[in-house]
Image (tube, rainbow, N blue to C red):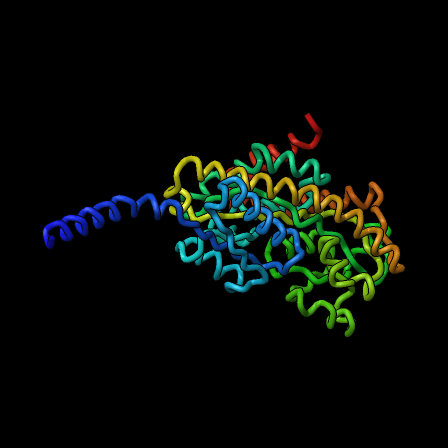
Length: 334
């Protein structure tokens, strides 16, 4: 009897061990993704969309946990965490240019005429050229590119002509690309954290700033600076990034799911931002603000200022000329 019982236990253990790998494979895989924007912003919506699509494509195998609003630290911290594999994914913008200078060209001043132009470039060769060598340097893989919106001026006075920009005290992000472009426009750029903008406007320290329409509306900037100029001088582009070692450890089918989910999420955000901009303009006007589209002279002035600021890229990005020429090739729909 004892021999029979021992035999049964041994067989049970063997069967259990044999089943263990299969059981492990059936378990839900959790992917943590960190971002800096709060709920409701395009970046955060994009992270949630990615999670929803991946769960559906994988039939529930993957569960994406979204940590927005810098819950896992500021951008540099969660980017570092993703590189080390502490978390699997993150969303960010040109902060990755610290690892690969070409990533700053995602927000090249006066590069794109409109969202359609930008989308063709970001879904084509331009995006590939910007990312050339990035994974090898960073340990991160770029999964997509999606817009947060074009930056437009919000000011206390109407901007009718280029001379209205001369000496204008505008808040700018403390980033060389932005401060240099402001200088080329004749603007007195004031590097300030975005959180300090409302108080700086109240105290007349600055005359305005620039942001995507979604930010202008969500923070009601038009109540203090009622004049919005649709300059569209810089398109803010963010991406979803994944730890390369984690990505390469996955089966081919799972990689396909991740790639497809990222593409689907980006598609949603491109459409959402375009529709959101139209609604934002209506909201600003309904609140008594003015929304003006610059004339050709103003636009041409901004284009020339933008081109002068591109020198920064020529000095730091080996294939900058190829990237700029590629983007220009997508100007007209093919």
